[in-house]
Length: 180
Image 1: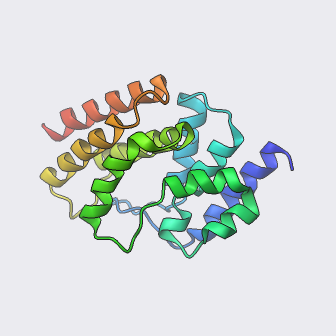
Image 2: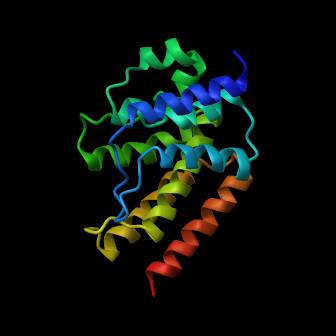
């Protein structure tokens, strides 16, 4: 299967799995916009053209947020994509605070590909927190998210200088906007 066909199939698969899901932001945009944005950040800003990384970016939340299984990811998209997706997947059986702390702890041990996906994910999330925050998130909660994102990204450094610079710029913009 060609790389283009694999990417389109992954986008379609993710769209189907996330049907009916929306982002937490006040504008409640369709959830699929997030994995598409993560893949766009990787390809355009991070200059990533590795098909497994881009495919995993499109699928990075499917196991965590839908009934998709790791085996299903591997059957459809291969072992490497499954590995990246699982490196980016939180265990929803754990309390939220534990999951967040584990992201900080595990970040330095991720593969380079998973680190790049995580960088793009944090860029996308902080951009959303800055521009379209959930209606019930206080200013303090939004600032805490940015600070937590910076802690996660500290462990991702060395994976992609361009994405790291973009993350730093995005976090700084968020801090400035949220401090006004």
